Image 1 (cartoon, rainbow, N blue to C red):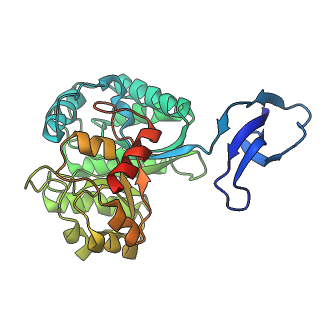
Image 2: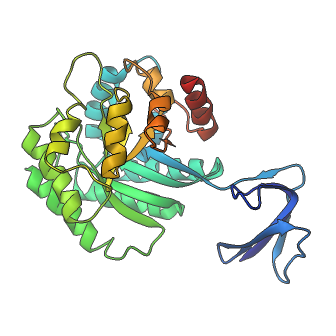
Image 3: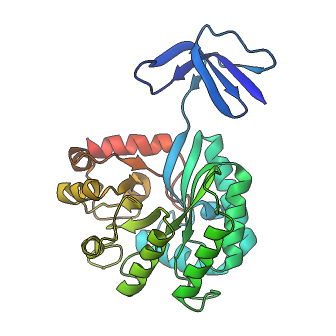
Length: 324
């Protein structure tokens, strides 16, 4: 199906085109073929009148837990430790494969409806191989683009994996079957268990599995409460050359100029979710100014609707206010 949008205020994000008042966009078989002003409607295309509307590129949500849609608001009066106990232990142990499929699908559809067309899904809902398949199916059904990061999150009860090796073997199974090709809209990644929740050798095993499979991996990084070791210890990983361009480090609230310079030097990426970080009582907001001073681009994510919204505009406003 071909579409022709006309009479819209088109935001191109291109220096040579800028914003186009009364602009047009031609989409052919899902690909934008032309953007401009005073363009004639191609023959056979469905014409959409964008008068009074703004057409913008789709957002990229760089940190999201899609499976949690049905838990909207359950952490409305909880900080990070309460979230860990309620969601990451109790609810996740009770979730069936069909629950993670429906949750992942509904969340992705909500994002598309709100203008987000690409996502990094930190899918730490993999209690069993069946949960992995179901979560993946939900995301694929939605048609959203992005990275589905198989979660190594440990589950204390109802887990089907007898060891970390079994869990990693299951990730490899999906890599060689469902993601044998890298040509689809959805690509595979890995999301690791928070550093400090497991013995260090298991954390290293998780990251090395991502490197061995040449997959991007993501981790909640330096965003813990108080003096607990959870999420901390990035320099241990650096010393062992485990952080490189495949790493997407989320939150990084405790980072300053030196740590962000480190990210820049090894080619890793950084993403922030200011809404949940502030709400959950993480000790301090991200220092965006020092990230930018170090030359690190700031990506944003909406994290989880168990406590906050899925609104990317809100994330942008909060990031700006925090930086100021």
